[in-house]
Length: 417
Image (cartoon, rainbow, N blue to C red; front, side):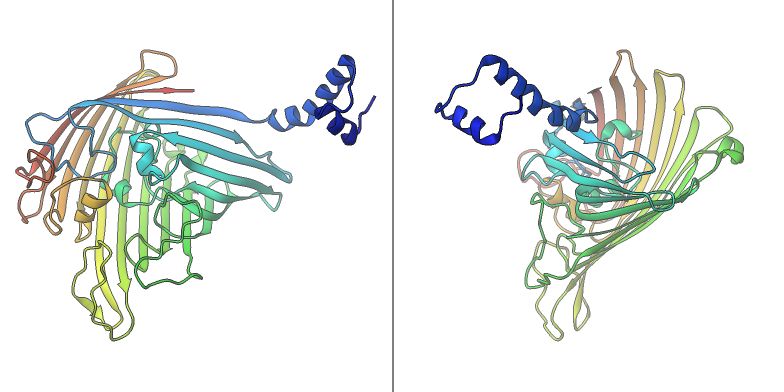
C-alpha cells in the first residue's frame, strides 16, 4: 500500500496513527532512492603524522617551504583527510562528485585555514569523442610535480616549487584525452591564489575587477607501450594567469617530466616552476602597492614589479621491492619573491630581501611494515645560497636569524583507507 505525503505529514504530528506494518513498508520505500544514490559512493582518506628533529638550537626562522613552520623538535598531526566520491561511468552521460574534508596543520595551509573543505565539486561526463570531463566547484591545483597529499609524493617535505603554487581553485575545469598519449586540461577560476572562502575573489587594494578571472591549463604527453622501457613516462607543460595573492596579475609557467628507465624500479623526474607577479596601479599613480608583497622599482607608469620566483628540481626514485623504496630530490630556487614565503608559511624574523636564493637536498627511505601504512625516514638539508645575510635559526619569537643551514630529520607515518 502506498501512503501519500499528506497522510505521512498528519502522522508525523500525531493527528492520525498508522499500523506498524505500514510504517515499516513506508520506511523501506523511502530508503530505495537513498540506497541507489549511495551505492556508487566510496569513502577514502588518510591520517598523516610525523616526528621532527632539527639538530642544533634556535627554530625562530625555519626554512620557509610549505608546512615546515611549527613542526620543529616535536610530534605532529599533519593532516586527517576524509573523501566521499562517486566516479564517472565511461562512455555515457554520467555524473559524480567529490566532497573532501581535511583537518590538521598541513590541511590549514592547503585550504587557507578558514574551514575544512579541501575539495567539493560536481563531476560531469559528456560522451563526446573520447569523453569530455567537466568539474565545477572547488578542486585541486593542476600544475606542479608534487601534490597536496604527501603519501603520493616521493618525499614527505615539500619543495619550494610546491610552496609557491596555489593548492586549490574554485571554478570550472574541462579535461579531454585526444588519444592515449595526449591529454589537455583547461579551466577558469575566480583566482589563482588559494583562499579559505569557497567563492573568494581575492581583490587586494584598489585593483578590484569583478569580471577578472584566472585561466588554467595543462598539457600531458605520455609515452605509449610501443616505447618499451620508457612506456608510461610523461611530459607536462602548463600555464596559469590571473588574480594573485598580492598582485593584480600572476603568471605561472610549469614544465615537468617523469622518466622510466631500463632498470626496473628506477625512475627520474624534473620540474621547472616560474612565477611572476605584477601589481598594477592606475597610470601615472606613483604610490607603491602595499599589500605585503615585495615591491621593486616601478616598471612603467602603470605597474610595479611585485617579485618573481623560479625553482628547478630533480628527482630520483628506486623501488627496491613492494615494501621498500628510496627517493631523492635536489632543488635550487631563487627570486625576489622567495622571501614572501616567510609570511605565507608563518615563519618569523626573515626580513624581506634576505632570502633570495636557496638550495635543498632531500633523501627519503620508505619501508612499509604494516598493511595500508606508509612509513618513511627523511633527511633534508636547506642552505641559504644568497649573500643577503643569515636566513635560518635564532632563539625566541621574532628573533633575528643566526644560520645559513638547516638540517631536518623526520619520521613520517601515514595510514590510508
